[in-house]
Image 1: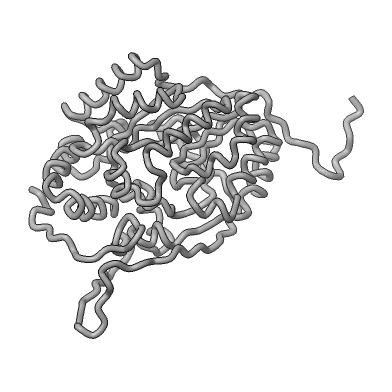
Image 2 (image 1 turned 90 degrees about the vertical axis):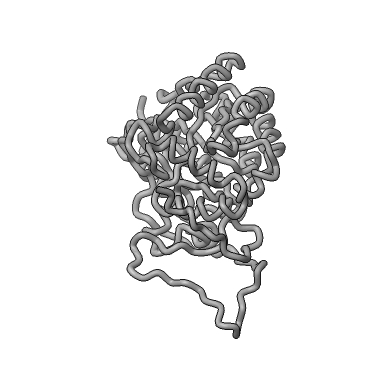
Length: 362
């Protein structure tokens, strides 16, 4: 049964944002709805400014044991993401801050300015065993506010001083600012960068990823990183059935032409509050295709908007998901794109000397 068969899109929009309103998060007991009483009507085209608060955590490296992903530790300099991608699987994390996964996720942001200092402290523990540290696993480390806070750059400086390997996933062209550090890390086999490219259609991209660089700019970013000797892989993610899935081969070809050496893909994921946010958006933005898109999405997730089971959540299931996987594999083989990037170096890790440390006699 299609729970959205009687869906009627609301009017109005928020300029330059991925979504228009604040869906009630799963922890709230009461849902709030705005009602036009005729006295003060909300303008149909309004502006919501980005607000940033700071957080002072006691630890900064997050550990995981997920069998679906290739890393066991990550660091997120920011909570929330100004890029405003309507499909972002990280939106539900804002509920833990008593904020909405909707508009709040892209306008009420949290910065962690102590991250570089905490990172150095945790890497200095005697029991620490080095392995690639992943950035961009929840929210983008190169979203626009990084230009002001520079937390990511400072973290890279710490990693360089420790000789620590790292992987970065981003859509932000601001990464070009740090090509100097990244090139040095790449020269020591200490970094790999994943660039997300969802579509080559600028109109679809603008509607779906409001503050992300246009596809042509993303390809330029790949080329500049690659030209600097930084290993780049393209992430065809998320693949949206019925909307972007037909572009898979073209995206891979364009990325390979821009210097990408590897590739991966992930099917659209709609966990928790993301499902109603995405459904609202797709019925408003593509009303003639929305029913087909959602039918394909559910077909690929066992009849549900999303199946969170291990082994299914990233690639989906069913005939359509299987066909996508086969197409991806064949295209990568033809283009020479690696399914897995070469292992990064771990044997260069060393805690740098600190002021006041006793000098070694040998």
